[in-house]
Length: 166
Image (cartoon, rainbow, N blue to C red; front, side, top):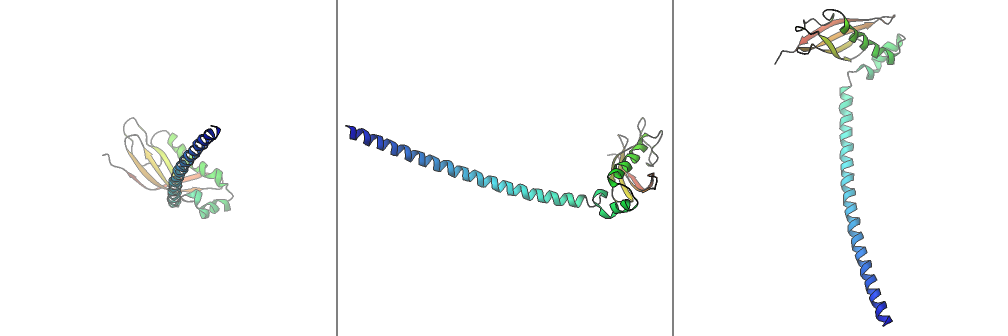
C-alpha cells in the first residue's frame, strides 16, 4: 500500500513538474515576444529622436544663440551674450508700451486695438524677424539692429508685410 501511495505521489509530482515546465515555457516565450516588440519600439523611437534632432538643427541654423560667429562679434565688443540676447528682445518688446502707434510697425491698427510685436527671433548679430498683430490683422517685420557701447539698441525697419484678411 505504501508503494502505491509513493507511486501516486511520484506520478502527481511528475505531472505537477510537467505542468510547471509547460507553463513557465509559455510565460518565457510570451515575455521574449513582448521584449522583442519593445526593443523594436525603442529602436523606432531612437530613429524618431534622431530625425527630430536633425530637424531642430536645421531650424536653429538661423539663430543667434547657435551662431558662433555672431556671438563672438558681441563678445569681442565686451558684451555678455547670455545677458545681451534677452536685453535686445526686451528692448524690442518695450516699444509695445509706447503711446500711440508702434514706432516700428508701418501699418495702422484696427479701431480700438494697437499693433504689438508678439514674437521675436534674432537671426544673427544684425538681423531680427518679428511677428506683430492687433488681434485682427497680423504681419511680420524684418529689422536690423545695432548695439552701441553704452548698451543702447537701435532698430531699423528694412521690410514688412501685412497678411490679407481671409
